[in-house]
Image (cartoon, rainbow, N blue to C red; front, top):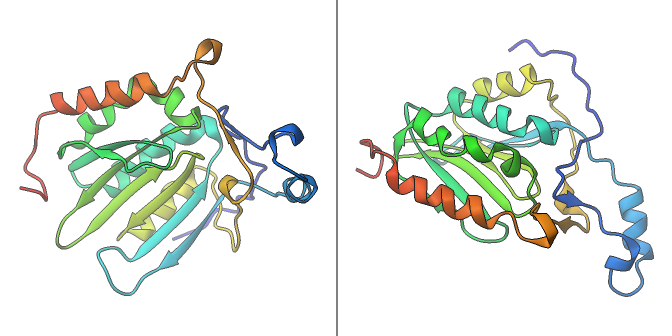
Length: 214
C-alpha cells in the first residue's frame, strides 16, 4: 500500500471529553496537572498483529471529533460484509448489539444522532460481523477513539490514510490521563439517554438478515 506523507496533528477533542481542572482533582493535584500539561494527544493510528484467532490486526486510532462519524461510515463499508450488526453502548458498560441486518440499514440507525455520537462523553457505538471463521469490528469508545479488529489490514489502513490519519510508532489516548466525561444536554440534563434508548428501539425494527448467528 502506498503511504501518504500525512503528519499527526493536535487532536480536536470531542465536546463531551476534556481534561479536569485543578478543583476537579482530589487531594494534591500537582502530579496530575503536570501529566496533563505534558500530554501530547494527536491524530494517528497504531496497530498490532496477531498470529492466531479470528482477526489478525488490531488498530487504535485518534481522529478529530468532527470527522469521527464519517470515518466510521467509511470503515464500515470497507471492512464489513453486506450483513452486519450495529452496537450502541454507554461508558463502562457492555454495549447492546442489534440484529444482523443489511449493512446500510445498520448504519442508518445512527445517522440522526451522528453529532452526539461523535461528541457525547458517555455514548459509544460500533458495527460488528462475527462468525466461526472471521471477526470484523469497528468501535468508537466513549473517549472517542477507534478500536478496530480486522482481517483486512490493507483496507483499514487505506481508509485511515485517505482520511489523513498517519501511522504512528506511539500514540497517546485521552483515557490514559485524568479525564472528565460530559453529556451534552441542555441545562445539565444527560443527552446520552435519548439516543441510547432510541437507537435500541430502532434495532427492534431492523429486518433480520441471515447472519453468523443464524
